[in-house]
Image 1 (cartoon, rainbow, N blue to C red):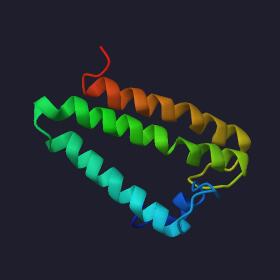
Image 2: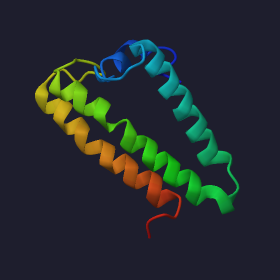
Image 3: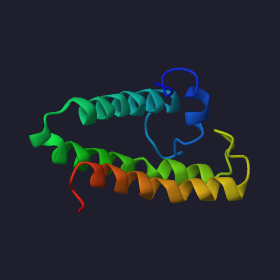
Length: 108
């Protein structure tokens, strides 16, 4: 929900320059996808959880270039106002991918 409301400006800092869409549109679309994925993770019947987990892990992998872009271009957002803080953020995205895969039974 934060993509669509209070943190929208911060998310703009993460959109790489090479994305062919308007930056604000990209933030909105990615927010809608995250809402849909989160809802699917909660409400999907157990027999489909593994598939939803794979999609969520793929999505978290696909948005990782945004974190890299924020680091490379030294864009301040979300309180990440130093190279060290932006670098540490990079370490959390693989953990998020792992969590999506592990919590849905894709990794034992």
